[in-house]
Length: 211
Ligand SMILES: Nc1ncnc2c1ncn2[C@@H]1O[C@H](COP(=O)(O)OP(=O)(O)OP(=O)(O)O)[C@@H](O)[C@H]1O
Ligand SMILES: [Mg+2]
Image (cartoon, rainbow, N blue to C red; front, top):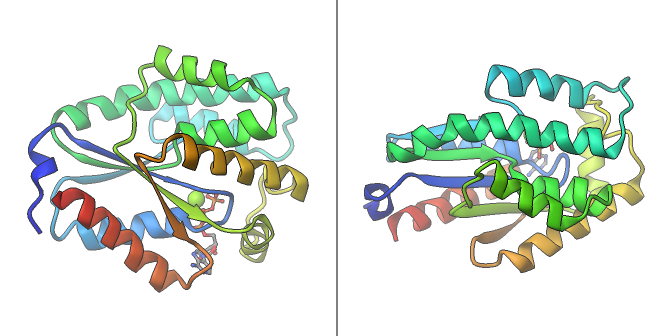
């Protein structure tokens, strides 16, 4: 498994999809397996990773805090601005950065679900210097199944309590992302077993890095 891409700048791989589709499970599983071959894999999450961004994440996921769609949107942007500063040196040093959600999530949730104009989102991404992901794995799962998985886990956050209709809008948002950025998006059927999803994840990333 030669990795020519590694010789250039670092590689940014994002993991996307609706709540409970298995992003975090697949990302950490793939990082563990692929780290044996590729030495410079690091895993981060958005929102989160830095102290400030984790503090903002806690506000965003606190079920008892109600906020306007604009407050929510700018908190995500603020958390991401910090994260981008953290990621850049890793990419400059040639690392392979696995990122659990990134701005495609904002397009789907704050854009399609909450009605923040997509143009603002795309402009703010540029303003805060978001790098374009090299590869995005989109875990595709019907909204009902995703909600059910998180409920059976006992995971409760503000997003999970919202209606199924809102989840459906998020799903549509990801369909838009898949079309708009088809050069970097690879879709994985997330209704398969965890083992199969992990196998496909590892295979796609390995193929990508060896190109
Ligand atoms: N392929 C799968 N089949 C069945 N259950 C799965 C699968 N992948 C993950 N799960 C389970 O579904 C739940 C949600 O998984 P996970 O936390 O990885 O999803 P996520 O996409 O990161 O969710 P969130 O958007 O809430 O962060 C967990 O209980 C996990 O063990
Ligand atoms: Mg997760």
